[in-house]
Length: 60
Image (cartoon, rainbow, N blue to C red; front, side, top):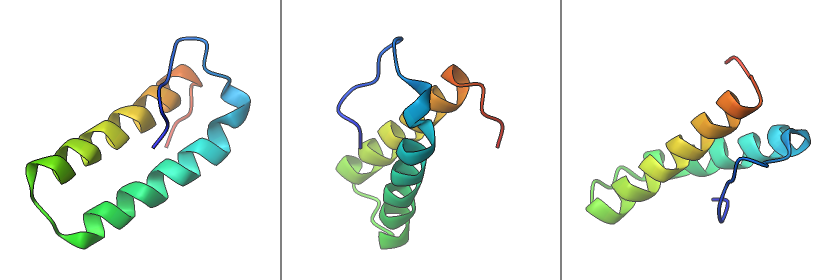
């Protein structure tokens, strides 16, 4: 997970960052844990992925 994303995010890093975030998200979902901390982490990863895709105009 990235520490923090801001409006000045460099889209040149989007490919690597999205790959890393999506791998981390898949690993968490694969654990099958439903505890609140894991759900919060999943939600944060989803938000980071959405932010990068919107900011950098990436269609999936």
